[in-house]
Image 1 (cartoon, each protein chain N blue to C red):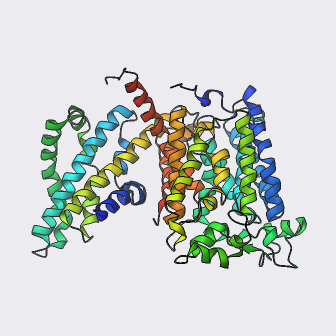
Image 2: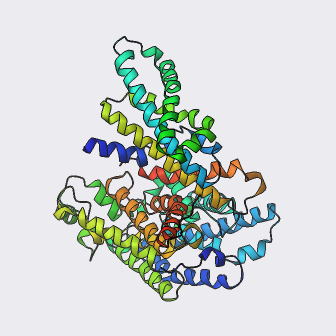
Image 3: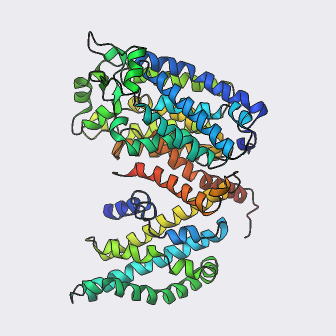
Length: 190
Length: 349
């Protein structure tokens, strides 16, 4: 139980993969700049990251490791993620209309999220159990969504600012993300 | 619940709001004088360098953008940022450290977001965090408070101070030491009583740490003055200080070897009071309603305590404030929507 709590807190706040390992930046910067669609996007991303992490974990422990196929890991994970996508769509459709809508609208943003693959490759090297991988998936998804939502709201606020012309648009977005990670660097070491 | 009109509307642009910044600068006078008394002329030199750099860089950016220079400089908001930065940086820090910090705060955190009014991150704390992460060694050399100096050693006088800051003379040996939070952090595994007996920074103090407690009380006085003058509401500072106090009491642990230190130490050491009254109350990077301010202050207090107690850095006001700034729009969003729901007008998207 304590391990799971540690995983939750550390992957949501301390080792947040977006701001420390720069996973999923394409989704972060490509996402819509309004908060309502981003909430749906976040829910869908949490769902997909959780499913993909668990599936990749199973593939790794059941196929790759017993047969010494570590060199095929990346390829296998890409295929697994591809196979998980329809499942995620199906579950998303059944559970929540908001998730369903954003799954339809933002397909490329959600499924090309580099974080999905990156997270699986990162946590597979850690010595964790199946349940822990499930919670790692959920909490990394929540961490990603938290950054995505905070970033979108900050960008909404920055849209009101009189930003110098060369810095308008994506540039001020990168500056904002950089300053966010400046704050998060203080949490290192906890 | 009363919804207060956004401070951003009347934040430091021009006109009536100018006096607000004058008041804040006035409220910093006790802190500047006490810090100068405790740590020597280094503080004053820091402020001078920071104000000069900030004003010049702001003027250059405004000129490049063809904005009216005089009006924007006259609102003194960059001076306020520079003074806060000068107080936060270690006295007698090398001049380039202060210059880099001021440039980061004015250019990156302030001018890129279009001068004042809509900043997302507190400029002074951005500058501080940039140099803290880039030059940790220089940032950890704090001057020993005057009452702890060894017999026969004095703080350098004003000319010596200038020559130290500009690198012509590097004799700061013997007058630097660990701050209370540093000393506490480095004493892992000791009982609090043992730490208090062995470290003079604690054993000769009234409440928290020699010198630092008085500096913090000076900031507190300035803050109370600003509260009286209704420059900002009590919510955010109150929530932040209460959160730190409660957490410090929970993890005090009877002063055992895993104790995170007494509430007094946390309240009256480092930048606590400065952060509570002069940093997180900055209207443009903060939140709007009073309920949101309570949440905002509590969140910053939580981060400050957690980083101090278990993180890598001895003090965390800058990081706490920046993390609070990150979360500020989210807090506004949450409080806006919960208010809507509680008033029965849930918005159907």
